[in-house]
Image (cartoon, rainbow, N blue to C red):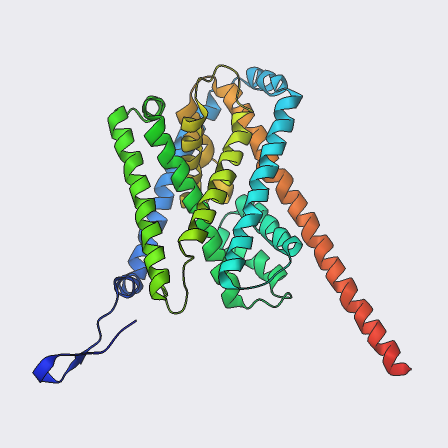
Amino acid sequence: MALRQDQGASGKAEAPTTAIARLAETLNRNRVLLRRVGVAMSLVIVSVSIFIFGRTLVKIDFAQFESAFRATRAEQILLALGLAATSYLALTGYDALALRHLGSRVPYPLTALASFTSYAISFTLGFPLVTGGAVRYWIYGPAGLSAGRIASLTVVAGITFWLGMGLVLASGFLFDASAIAEINQFPASLNRAIGAALIGLLLVYLFWVARMRRQGRGVLLHFRLPGAMVTLGQTTLGVIDVCAAAGALYVLLPNGHGVGFPAFAALYSFAAMLGIASHSPGGLGVFEATMIKGVGGSTDSLLASLLLFRVIYYIVPFVLALALLGAHEAARRWRSLSEAIEKAELEDD
């Protein structure tokens, strides 16, 4: 936004832009370069992960892998299913908070359907802004939401996800620095400093959005970020989601891994971030390579746990999401057909 200011005797007016507007202009000018840098970084992440994961797969003893897979108890699987369900339940709150911020009224059952199916599909296929946005448009469009509002909703929900992961990562570095040091080989003091810096960034973001809210200013065009209270709600939901998802894998780990949950949740968040940055579907290969490198121990047992986690947290929700989308579309078309038949009968009378 620009405000015209008089400049004394010169009589000329200048239109100073905000820092956000200048940043947006800079990004727009360099969008080709930024796209190339992003692609290069993704290729580096994928290449390194494939190398690590490939070396791991070559060394697998399939007899031990099968034994580790069979050693997983039924109660571990049930607990993992419950934690995965808790994570997806928290994800439905992402859309609910975003809709409240945007001032759009949508019944919660429809919100839950759109949120669950969009995340279950985007987690598996990758490219969440595209796949998740398309699923949301499919469901929210007939409910009266415009494409612009659905895009804004997707952005706000995405911010919720990153806030949760950021706080979990920061907490692990800050409060379990010694355990993190065994994973990344950094001094515990450096890990605490990293955690404190991440907490500082989150506090700066909270202060910034509160100030933007008070001033009634948008970040870009008319898009406004949630205020401080909604941001705190976003962060809480994000932490619940990430911790539940990390817990679903944690309970499947073999005995004797020796990693406490705070450090494990931070490692999970970091692995998820790398998976997203790689743009591979579901972070496949990247996520596993990071977790194997961080947790250590028996590779065969850990791979069995990761495979089970993939089935529980990705494959089962993906299949369920497809079934729900099909049922929703069939019900919507049936209602349309029933209304058309009823209207035709009234016209005949």
